Length: 257
Image (cartoon, rainbow, N blue to C red; front, top):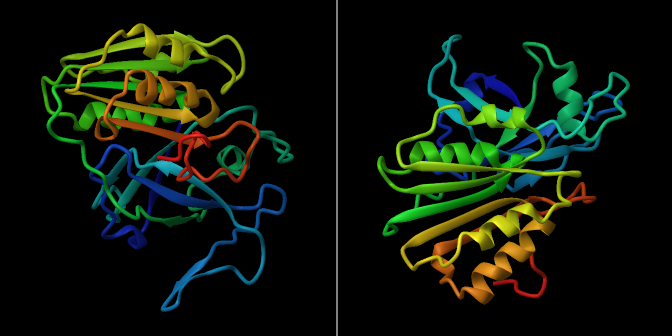
């Protein structure tokens, strides 16, 4: 996990009040280094005249109206899925950029489009995620009302990932799920959710991470437990093997609701 702080007058007015608020970041071409992004006009977003955009979505980890340089600041935490090699032969544009970036390098940021606040009317919360959604889980822990019981089920690849949530809020319980194998290939998260037992009507369940791994989680919550839609949010942040995954699309093709 790598913390990146972006700053500049263009970030003025950026607001992120919800735990799932995210921005779309346009990275340079991993091979050529060219930064291409759409431009906002009176007619809406227009594609770039040259180059190929490389957009990726990231949770807003933190936002401040004024930072050390006097400009607004935006914190993003990048999960590096694999080695970022100098020749650009790595897993994606974000990791390649992170391996080469120096202070002053430009990026293009769009969003957040909207903000979904912490839902009200629930007595407890269950958060389930893999390491790609740990930034959002951290935001949940920061924004939930003090004293609210919350359990976090976090799938990780190594013990080093545990350092990402060093300070736990009162009432929070974290269960670290060691994965053996590559990200997006393990059933440990679904198994842990099932092991929680009955989930009452006053518990809100949020799950996020690799879309394929979450299909079983969603089917368990919605079909087997028959939890109400208002108390369940399952979000696929990415899909294994898909570089252009639409995280707004339903993760379960048999149940688009």
